[in-house]
Each structure stands twice: as structure tokens, then as C-alpha cells.
Length: 358
Picture (cartoon, rainbow, N blue to C red):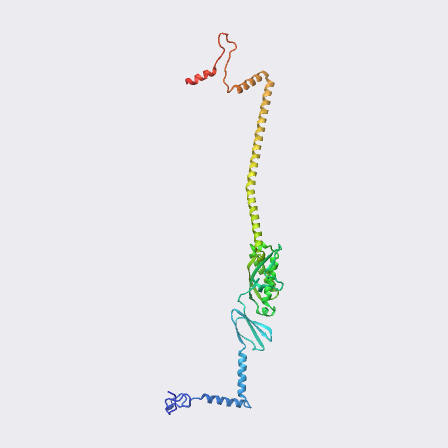
């Protein structure tokens, strides 16, 4: 039920000036009235400020307090802040709670510095066409071919002050520098390695040169990596390029087969030639040794012949006949036998009978 001041001292009206009965209250008197307190405070303020302008002063004081409080700002752990005084850079702010002179004296720019940003060079389609009508991804190689190279540059803000004030268009500068560096590197390489085996090396080389160039500009940017999305022949000549690649592959395969055949045949021929040379050397040594032996024997026989001609002649005759008749059947005839006896000795028949009797 609503509160009423019905004179009951035990239940005073909380909105009015009710009294607690029995004098058992804390103050033993009336409870303070909020409106009364405000009114008295205004009267005291009027006595301090002549002219009765206390309300305006309070408004101005509250406005000033709000203005000062507006200078507080927070920088998150992944952010960096830069304070500008009348548009001029004054200081960098690390993560945490900070205060600066409120607007319009000072302002603050807070940006994420750990977020990875990606700049793409070589976007397909009409949006990538320049005023000259060429795709920004088409680049000239060392062997005067055109290659289509599309790649990403991943970067972060390293120094927010330099990022905001050293470059008029930071992202455009990063893109222009990256494209220029990649064109220079592609111009130093031939098309086949660019498409096949040299991508990793080109990425690392481009990363180093982009970092060096942007640091010389004091760009406030940290380049993390370069990623080649695609490197291939332009679409208009892709089929012809693939035909050339296949022809070169066939040529290389034929060369490899010829080299393999040569590696098999040449060592075999060299081995055969070496064997024939060794056989010829052995035959020459054998023939020379035999000839030298025959010559030495002839010399020794000749010396014997000079010393004893008859004996040597007879010995030579007997040795020669022994060699001639060694494997022949022999029949001995006695020239001094009588006419009534057949001068015939069948040694061959005797040898056969002897062999059969055994």
C-alpha cells in the first residue's frame, strides 16, 4: 500500500520528513531531504559566485570534464597508436590505456599492426588491365618470352607513424615496388625455370629486394613473404608453348637414350680393343721368344757342327728321321739277305699279333 503520513511514529514516510517515534533513531531528528540539500547547495554557490551564474559555471565545468575525459584512449595488444597535434605526428603509443589532449588540439590514429595484409599482383580479368591494355602479370623473360606470373605479397605495419606519413599511398607503393622487383627478377631468368624449378628461389629473391626497397623508403612496413600463385605461359600462346615443351622433352629423351647407348657401347668396345691389344702383345712376346730360342738353338748346333762335322751331321740326320718316322708303320728290308729268303720283316703284323695275344 502507498506510504502515508498518518501520524504513526513507527512507520515514517520515506519520501517526506516523517519522524521516528520514541527518539530511538540514529539522529533523534528529521531525515535529510534531497531537494532541500540541493537548494541549500545552490544558495551557497550563489554566495560564492556573484551575479547568480552558478548554473552556467556548473555546466561549463561538466563540459570541461567531459572534454578532458574524451582524451583517454586504449590501444589493444595487436594495435599501435600515433598521436597527432594539429595534424603533426608527436608520439607513438604502445598497447595500454593512454591520454592525449582532446580534440581539436590532438587526435590519435590507432591501427592493427599484427594483422597480416595481402597485396595481389596479377589479378585476372578486365579489372587488371592497365591503360596500355596489358595485364600487369605479363612479364618478359631473359630469353625474350612472355610469362604470366601472379603472386601475393603478405605484409604488416611495423611503424605506424612512417606508414601514415612517409608514404602517400602505402598499399599502392607496396604493389608498385613488388611488381617492379618481380619484373626485374623474371627478366634475369629464362621461361622454363620460372615455370618449373625456380619458383622457390624467385620468391626468396623477390622478398629480399622488396624489403630492401621499402626500408629505403622508411615505409614502416614489414614484408613477411612472397607467394607465387601461378607462373605459366600466356593463355593466347599456351598450346603452342606446350607443344614446344613436348618437343624439347622428346629431344631431351632422345639425347638421354643416345647417351645411355653410348655409355653401354663405348666401354664394351674399349674393353674389346684392350683385350685384342693384350692378345697381340702376348702373341708378339711368344713369337719373339720362340724365334729367339730357335735362333739360339741353331747357333748352338752350328757351333757343334763346326767342332765335329761328321758326328753332328749324323746326329742331325738321326734326330730328323726320328721326328719324321715317329708316327709311321715301319718295314725293315735287309739288303744283304740271300736270294732264297724274302728280305721282309712285317713289324706291323707282328705288333698286331702281339696285341691280339695279350
